Length: 387
Length: 101
Image (cartoon, rainbow over all chains, first blue to last red; front, top):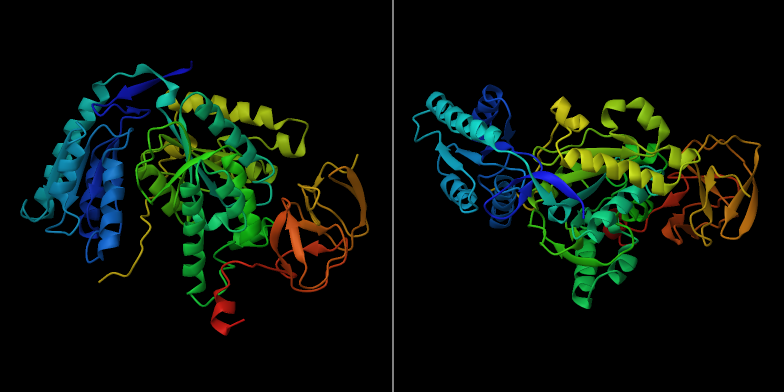
């Protein structure tokens, strides 16, 4: 059994960080959130363009995503900031976060009589939570508590030959010890969906995989344009990837070849059972990683070909590449360089060990490069039009 | 043993990935399953890009990982660079759906 040192939550989850997000419910609260997070050291701003004048499927998805950040295992407590009355309701969101036993506060800029008072109330609420969070101590817990997030970023042809294999190796090492892993990016199953469906634990999950892939294919066809350029992207093509199928077959390598337990919707919580799960997300990295964060993954392996700044507010991201040129070109985006397993004499087992060792350090508190640099993106995948 | 820096993933593959810079005029040996395929390289192929292992007709399936990654949009000779200029995808083709093809 492998232990790690983590933060206990009242809902039974264990965090590898003790973050205090300040969450905007709509764009009109974004500046207050950013200003408060500038003032309160260690508070994390969650801002976005959604949460108002959306159709119901988007309202549900926005709410589910924001709630996922407020109740993430790595979240100690959260401050919710609304501008006025919104369809994504600030009081309801703060209440649902509080239901998990986490400290939560709801600030309404209009009720506070404007942005200056709203800012002061937000700062005061976050300040108290950050100080309380800093007093909490890490305790030893079994590694089976952890959820391993997996995403590609600027894939190239090295991805499927090297770094994705190491990523899969480490993910299954955690699953073999009772943990779980989640990968995503449904349009990046194109061409490999039948092999993927065969890995499902039952017919229902297999059909779900095929149906979700078909749905994405339909949506892309309805645009009336060739998806090439969006998938694969120009930097994918520069790295040698020719079609979405080639990108996808490489991308699927990062899930290994073991059974798929289930497919969950965007930003839905990843189930507690051990095993490999899929989340339905677009190939758009920031949107995909944002969804996986809401699903509760503790950390994220960004398996990249050409290097990428992709990172997240509540999930530390560990970036791994097997492309020696990328490791040299963007060192501050390379936490783990396993290119020796591609162009040198090292094995994939060695690459897996390198990644696993870094994961154990990070879950115990070592900051990743993107954490040190303060890099993160937040982009909720939207479904329909604004109204 | 073939060149370890030109990789065919599965025996059925008709393209291989260069993980070094490959130059026009080279003769390379590629391990494809249990076979060794010898190819005269017809043009420079950059790190990460693909080389045709056999002659491929227009409309033929391009196979990598043992599965289709698209189809040849023109005739491709063994040793040619295989990329977006001579391969089309079979997915996300809203353009074909719109034109009724």
